[in-house]
Amino acid sequence: MFESLSQRLSSTVQRLRGRGRLTEDNIREALREVRVALLEADVALPVVQALVERIKVRAIGQEVLKSLTPGQALIKVVRDELTKLMGSAADELNLNVPAPAVILMAGLQGAGKTTTVGKLAKLLKERRKKKVMVVSCDVYRPAAIKQLETLAQQVDVLFFPSSTGQAPVDIAKAAVSEARKQFVDVLLVDTAGRLAIDPAMMDEIKKLHAGLDPVETLFVVDSMTGQDAATTARAFADALPLTGVVLTKTDGDARGGAALSVRYVTGRPIKFIGTAEKMDGLDVFHPDRVASRILD
Ligand code: GDP
Image 1 (cartoon, rainbow, N blue to C red):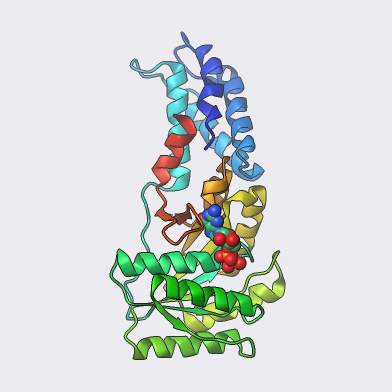
Image 2 (image 1 turned 180 degrees about the horizontal axis):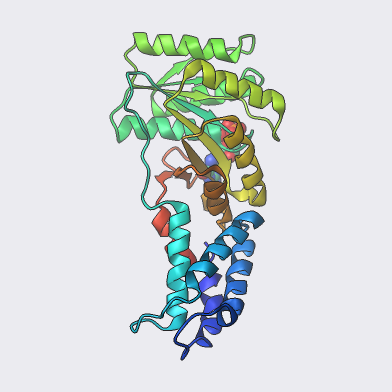
């Protein structure tokens, strides 16, 4: 991610050598490089502006520690601000509720929701030793229900069947009572997406949220959608009390700006990243690593 930022900064930063202090004047060029690098990484413009402003405010007038060159001092400020924006530590799923803990998945069609349900089911079963059930509330696409069934078989978790004639809330509620009967620890609820933000989709997911009262509401977003990821994130964060984000397809994303944008826009932690299509392609997100990858 952002490999070019430290390279970009290195020459401008060289010119800061020999100055005792960072001033608005002498960091202007360096800040421009930060701005361009973040935009090239596909970070959404308002996020870039906010970030550069914070870096500027913190950097200006800062006495440069004897051990650091002014350039190093600036890079430290950039690193600190990126880390702060991303959150400081990996954030786990909250399962501290009476069973079954319900996890609701939200996001556009194609974002990777169904795939992520399969991956999360596997992770919860294998690493956290949970009894897991999955259910699809996508009553518009029989293929999506079938896809989830196949994944459930593959990772060997319970699958609650549903069909296109039913109301999503009814399916979800029936799944919760079945999960309770079977002493399931975690129920993962997959939902219907659309190709773009759509009021009917938002209405439906809001109803599902109200009916289920999930302990986690995860927004799933394709990291390769770049600037659009921020817009989509804003719409979902406005509609639902999200508890976290899953950033998918990071294996195909060279730029990485979506992580910054989505974190900033939703104010919610990125809990997992998708790193491959296969069922073990899900990693815990480490915010501190992002800042390092940007700069080192
Ligand atoms: P949904 O419509 O949101 O349920 O999206 P799907 O789960 O059907 O995923 C859409 C496509 O993205 C599928 O072809 C998945 O295999 C693929 N996909 C999902 N997550 C990842 C990921 O982390 N990496 C890669 N390379 N592909 C992914």
